[in-house]
Image 1 (cartoon, rainbow, N blue to C red):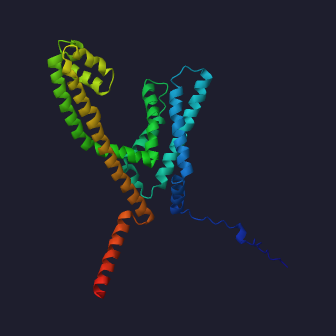
Image 2: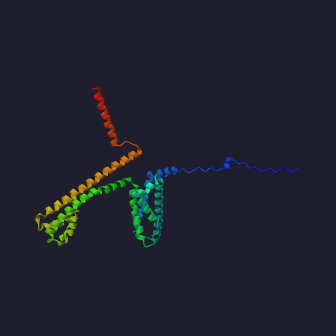
Image 3: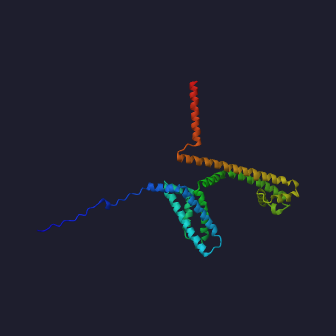
Length: 292
């Protein structure tokens, strides 16, 4: 009798099966967002930026070849950290198309991208050094308070323009008077209107201005009125105007920042609380009027 060949059946168990869990992009984005918003990560990036600035300063000295090699490795490490940091910020952005619509993100990306170009041994070595100097400006994009200060100064420029224009008019008038009266006394300081404006800038900054005043007072005893009134208009009045404009704009920007933070955290602002208080007062007044 012929024996039938039985096929061997290898039992399959569930342990031999491999299951691949799909990667959730939202979880990755959330993880990188938590890293970006972490204060320790922000402090680490600020420390690296400061180290990068110090590294640029150290390279201005004459160093031994071993020290130069070590600084080169440190510079490469800092560039790699900056590349990882900008990558984390890009992945953590919920809307990737909005990332490059922010000016500071474009600036950071350009600085990091230019730092990756190997131009240290070429004719563009000066450009490479300048780019590494501009790394210090990345601290403004990292620290929100610095961004608020710079934004306040930029927004204050239109108002400061009128103050500068008025100051130029005052400078021009006093320079014309000084060139007319004091040219014969000291042509080096009062020879023409441009030199006179430069001399008046020296007076405004209090750089040995008394020597200039005493020289003209020897011929015109009442010329001290010319200098004191000029100092009052420029060093005191205009300086206070500039400070007032900048402080006002900074307060407005600070309030806007607080409103944005409150909106993100869904917390009521001072304005919302005032509106609620006014509503409560009106309700109480209506109730008291109805009772009466």
